[in-house]
Image (cartoon, rainbow, N blue to C red; front, side, top):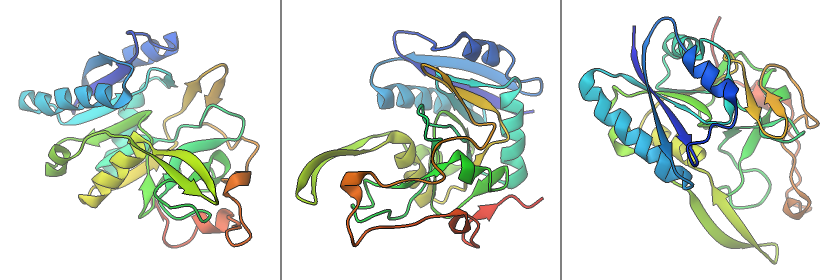
Length: 258
């Protein structure tokens, strides 16, 4: 049995769906869970507040930290399923695949590799739900970027003392046009953790919905897009790319062996 700190960042103490709170009540039958929350409009400040509390709780025997966004509704027992998958594959960080709130079927799980001819710091290759379902239920990649919507971290490793959540923002010029760009906190956390030797995995074994004006599930291969698509302003004659499922099933992509 593990002792797990469950952190829920909020704004004005609001939970976007009552389903989230029901899921928290029924999150485990196997582990000790202490739920904490932050209330702040600055995402990274709220996340880092929870991260610091999780670091401090190690002195009381807590070994894992689970971050749950207030607009994510996971299935009952999600702590048990996420922990089981994590220990089975030997992950230091594991994240449930979360679809973006739009009809494309793209997710916040990505691969840190150049896509198009924009500076790769600002443009990553996002995985679609259709691509995710072409992979093993729990999978990894040498350059995987995880989402923080439902993410569990093993807090017993030394590297956790050296990371924090942060955005990167900039205005760049691309093809004669100025653009506001950013790198989100979840992908920055993934890159920082990986640089310190952490093993990162993603999973769809934990079913969930991302709640917006409608509900966006991770339980099927849905969406208008087969793969990530360059926006019109990102395409040039020299940067047209074509990505298919073969790219994701290449030997460089790790997957749980069953």
